[in-house]
Image (cartoon, rainbow over all chains, first blue to last red; front, side):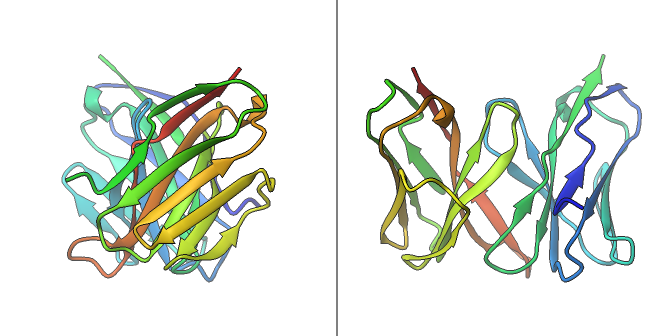
Length: 109
Length: 116
């Protein structure tokens, strides 16, 4: 199993739809989990941290399932500006963070 | 007041040359990284330094030599550049995100290296 695995997509979704991404990780001792967003030709930026209890930030909801070792990101009422690559990020420890290959999302008008 | 800055932003050079990329962070973080993002967009860690000490070296060819003169700077020197070195190189530092107990990575804008 790869350390962090994501469906590369692309996901082509009409504006206003709900889209969900999943990500699996191999290290059961992982402590921290994040979703990053990377726009074309730009650096990755933190979208949200993922907490054990799940967390929501506006249209975005992140969930963590430690038993099955996956995290998810749900985007509701998608906007054209949500088009980007979404990177699943897992931290086994404080000094090393592992990035998934990313899932490309295209929101269609 | 850029948090993590890199220079140059674009670098075009011939095979066999030696080049350096500079990175500086003004966040007061102890840990900094170099990542390589290739044409397939996979972001792969190369090196990590904590307070000027190398802590991660991910089987990178020894043509790549990071140098950390102080904890705010992590430069990357590349000898004898090869075609396969063409990629975007991101510098990052890690520290607590505002109001959080979790570490967040802050990335520089990237250096797009093209080897001809």
